[in-house]
Amino acid sequence: MDELLAEVAPRQLAHLVAVSDHRNLSRAADAVGIAPRALLRSVRDLERAAGRPLLTVSDRAVTLTPAGESVARAARRVLHGLRRLAARASDERATLRVAHIPCTDTLSVILDEVVPQRPWLRIEESVAGDRQQLSELREHRIDVALCTAPTTSDDDLVGTPVRADQLLSAPANRGQKGQWEAPTLVAPVFGAAWPAHDELICHFEDAASTRCMRVAIPVGSGHELNAVRRAAQGASLLASASVLGARGGAPLKLDSVPLCLNWLLVCRAGDDSPVVRDFCSAAMLAAERRGWLHPAGARPRGDRQGGSRAPEHAEQRRSSTPGPTAAA
Image (cartoon, rainbow, N blue to C red):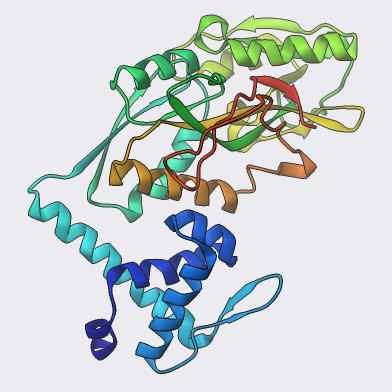
């Protein structure tokens, strides 16, 4: 392995790791910002340096050989060490400023997966509604927004869909079954803290010709959902998966189509910060592993605007997806 490392560049190791993560040449190439042919050529050069095949390529997938898996594991350690060395050389940890939408778990889940693998990264966390996040992102008060508010066609922000957040029905207490009848459905009201969720509930009520009991969320209590459960008194809770968290529930569908909130990972257009790029790439991988982009057959509705300009990061695209939608 020492002889191998003497003959290769870190970018080649990063290319192999991308192939290992995505198992698809096109997606791996997008993740590192090069063409698929260039990525394959880089890995083939690495193979020659290693003196053995590292991957096999078919029409549908890319498979790492046992030697490729071994080299990919070593490559991760090397790249991790290089990042730590760079952080120490600057004598400070890199900082990433992010904000949570109140009462939701989307950002927390991503941070729990991403941060332990990056000891050089310091996270500054705050709480902000989704439209407030976009405002703070434009004003450079946060570095990345994770929200459900749409960007606009003439915006200076780049958004990538990261989660199709399904509307669920869950029993307020264990042992009780969620039902559809209006008297048994209780929904939280976020108000200005998260209007997109309230709009999704209204959309469901109108489409299903029903009405839910509404309970205001006491934002900042630390036990917001418990207040809704107490008010439910045995009825079923109606909320998105990001609100219900591990408790979960049964997806609500209209004409067999799940109702979803579309979360976006949003950056400033032209932001070439390595910290932002690394976090966005890792966040998308975490979303893929959790099946957030296509849960239980849901497909977030795609872009509606007529045109778009190329985003600065290869893994991102501009989106104008509205908050409450039925997945198309």
